[in-house]
Image 1: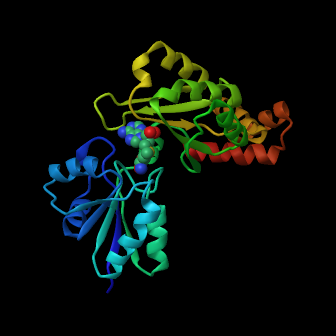
Image 2: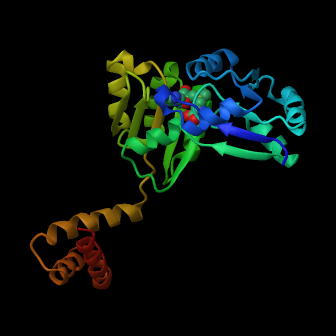
Image 3: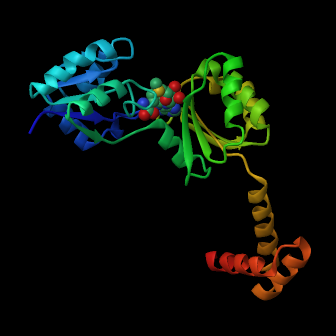
Length: 279
Ligand code: SAM
């Protein structure tokens, strides 16, 4: 068996969020490639891990890869970590993983915290389909161009944003997506000042503007997808049927809904049945 490259997730705030397996792997490998060795040294110290660190960040990743691959080919197991969360997710590591794969080195994920997934799991927006958009461009003109491309996206969208740009970005989103679009604001996840809220983009502008503390720390924005006309009609039919079913049988409710909306009776009946079964 050749050496293995472990891609290890570390906490995004609360240190208890590291996994037992992550600690075991970090202790057992020969070397840990880290985004910032000073930041990671603190984490390793906390868990009494004495494995040596070597820097692998976005500025040296390309040059460093040959050295790291050589060590792996020489049989040294290695772990890759970033400052926080899952490596490669808006963090360095992609080039190393790709190079390792090309040399048939086994790449093993050690899953754990990821701010995007943590935010999605708690903000209360549809999570069945979503897109991860990472960081938007820092210049407003470029940001608006990027947002325009996402205007009709129907999936939930997850963005990372820096605190000093949060207000401008949310204002740009309001401009492009509209003030009524739902948004989840997840700030300082797992930390002391954790704030998780769902509101509209218009409300979020006010919330951030009126409380400057909301422009501090680390932030994930989860934006609801665009509701297409078809979905809206479905939503309206559901609302109508739900109300009618409180007083009427499935048959009577679907007949009345069909008369009122012009929708086919068979479709209204099928949906009414589904709604009663959901309850
Ligand atoms: N690899 C990391 C992950 O798995 O989430 C993301 C690294 S990226 C350089 C840093 C961004 O992630 C921050 O600017 C913020 O948008 C988000 N983030 C990281 N930790 C967070 C936290 N505790 N609360 C909210 N957002 C966080």
